[in-house]
Image (cartoon, rainbow, N blue to C red; front, side, top):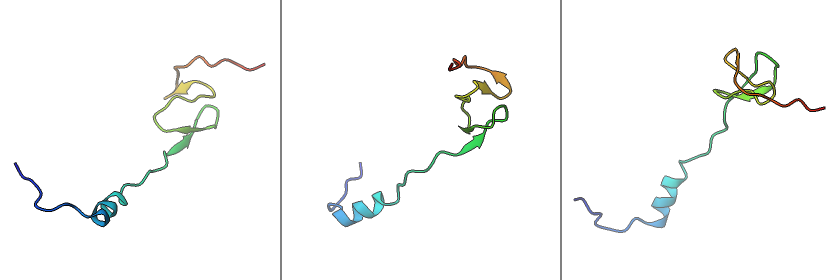
Length: 61
């Protein structure tokens, strides 16, 4: 099994970790109600996904 000969320096480790960045989730508009929705998710406003109702959303009075 391969074993490192020397310890990795803090700078080398931090340079590698600097490449990992968080990305913003992409959004699109719901074709039914027009609210921005995260892609591949059911709409929290109307409960529609790909043209059919999948969630029962309570209507606020």
